[in-house]
Length: 160
Image (cartoon, rainbow, N blue to C red; front, side, top):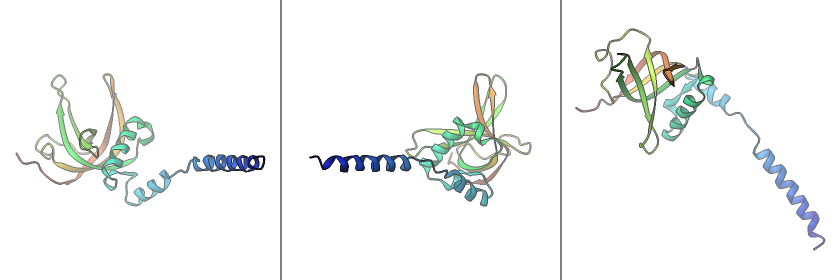
């Protein structure tokens, strides 16, 4: 039994070293960002799986300051809302999670003056939008948006 103590001590030290080095931080964001930049966007959500894109949008919403000014490409369902009290119109891309039970959206503001509904796709159309990430406060909320946005692709249009 006395001979087991050195082995136990050595095993404990090795396990501790392995745990500490295994939990070390490796910055993978630079490799992801550099590949995205090669495609022309700092954040290209069109290249991610449905669960990854939902997580990325969640991070963009909750850590908005770290994304300000970054070029973003995303696709999802087109959404429109008009605040009847103020008359302000809001346009967004909605992204569903992997189970398609929940969705998050990012508002976009087109770079050229456009008139709704003439210059926009039908609501619930699959669209791809690019723009520069920003956020703003309105009333009691904080909202994310893509500025100088362009709708680069209109996919499936819902049947009436």
